[in-house]
Length: 223
Image 1 (cartoon, helix red, strand yellow):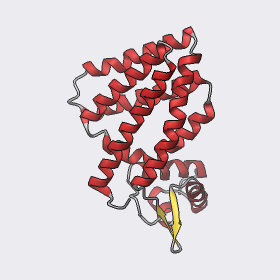
Image 2 (cartoon, helix red, strand yellow):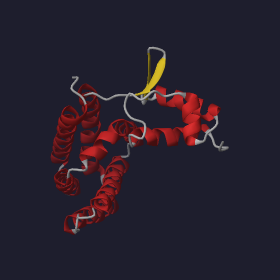
Image 3 (tube, helix red, strand yellow):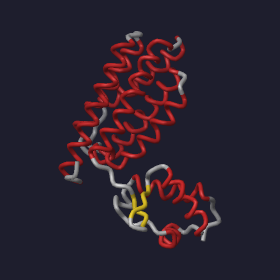
Image 4 (cartoon, helix red, strand yellow):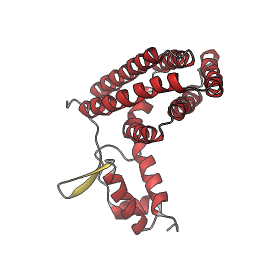
């Protein structure tokens, strides 16, 4: 067994959940996970408790299972995201310093450069976009000076990440998302806080509807 901590076990199990190595509804058992990932039972037990507290593992009928998301859950997640991230976009447009606007402009140039890349290597293209997407939203939280909002949204994002990764298989959706981020960024650069908030809300609504459509088509038929 590896002499690693519960944080190491937590990260490994969470990654397995996000990437669907552990699939929705799979039974979670301390002994099996310890054997599967090569951790001691105590770190795994503590990791399971933490993941259960965060909602990634649920208990039912005396068993622990990987959580299952339904369209209703996505609706709830995105209601919170839309409230927080629309506010953040507005605050960023209002508060951004000259230095921060330059940083945002440079990031938008990086995002724009993706539109000129050969997307035949789809996995590399998607990973580049995921990295820039994370950096973009992180920068907005930093400009808005609201780190707690960023922590809340990061946790919400993890809850539907495995479905988002499936959504990004759709090359058309990646292209639209890039365009939407450029619109949001330009509104922030120009100090148009109402437009920035509206565009962010619309972007997240589009993402939500795409995810729910995918879920209903490929995953679940429950509401």
